[in-house]
Image (cartoon, rainbow, N blue to C red):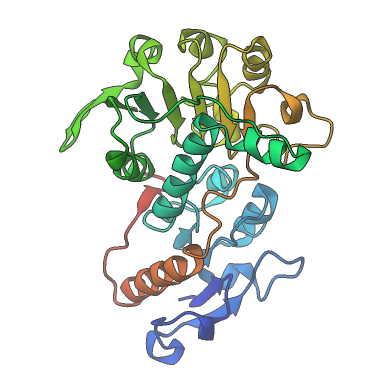
Length: 317
């Protein structure tokens, strides 16, 4: 039985990690560098390095013939999906639910407030020594639509609660009921979009959501509405978004883009009414301690033969 555990941190840096000899583990440090720390065939538990390219994330998978668990440190798993067909049946793929919700929801609310209240305009005015007073939109009394109502979408709504929104509507892949109210299925988006002043995207990137925000979606948004994307760049059709931004009909605040990183000279940089942050939704001081707690808990459960948390899929099932 293989016992290697590949970690993107040194084992001694993770409080609560099972002691190697007691658990029968051999901890290997690999943060995505060009050289593997050991033979990938001996890896049983692979923690995918954080904020690396998809190519880096999947590079060892074809040789991990004995791996039983692949654990990401991201909420989304799209960067490892190209490697899933390379895995043997029975491998559990786990995501980092519980690690990024607070930070991503904080940024979503920051982007909403900054965009509505004119903060980018104030920053530019300060640089030019111009006093840009006037009336600006408020979040209070606005209608908000959250597209992608998983743990991050729910965390966004938690933070919207004190801001006296007129309405918060929720959309997910399928309908369900929550303590806060109904979650509408994606099929109801066309009727919900015209009512929303702010549309917040927090959906995972899947075949169903790739390009979801295209020309038709954007055309259904009301005049003056704000689109906020803290999901994945390819959820939005960039060309269609630029067309709408250049018309001045809507505005946008984007933590993720397609392509990403956004290259110099790309027209999205200078499109009117857009605020761009460089994919920092989860990259905060809250990330590392939460990620390490997750790894300690998952590896403790694995060593004890107990069920793992956050299983997204099991290969071959």
